Image: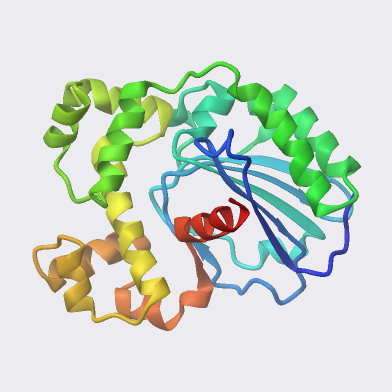
Length: 273
């Protein structure tokens, strides 16, 4: 098992054949001060597979899509090495073939959900000698879960429509463009992502806002208009309702938060290509 590495954070894009379902791999070697007591995961629609070695045992978990912030605090500092497999919104459904409504906003033992996957990833985790070897072995394990396509084509189309509009689109318009009724789409989203279509679009817009706050200084009045909010008061209210903090506080304490920054994934994957 890898217990030391020159780099504390090691991020790898997934293979192009897996990219629809797996965004990236992050292998972290925490120190006692890597994560703060306020360290919080921002809500997103993506599931995660997590394996961590605490010095005695490997803890393997499945994290469902989140609708609310998750306070991790300094918990990761206690691990010698941590592997996070960041999935796309429907990646966890493709891998587990199980209803995501049961996983949303939960951290579950992977062995309780998918014992076969647990043993395969556990073996990769304990047998790998380098970070590259670990990623390559995990890729082989996960590739076997991609042989049969189980995610609905209508859901794929609907998520693309929402993404292309940065979440600024009404449910009825998404339904029209995907040729499904709103009721049918909601059933698909709940089963294959873990939330209804309205919440998915809301989180898409929220993460669009986070991306712009993260990558460049901004004026919130202009950003609220760009993100399609009625006014800045609506923007502030929605931001706090989702994140638990105001946009102003988030900007001042960004190091305490983590969100699924897809632009990070796009950057590393473009370098690979």
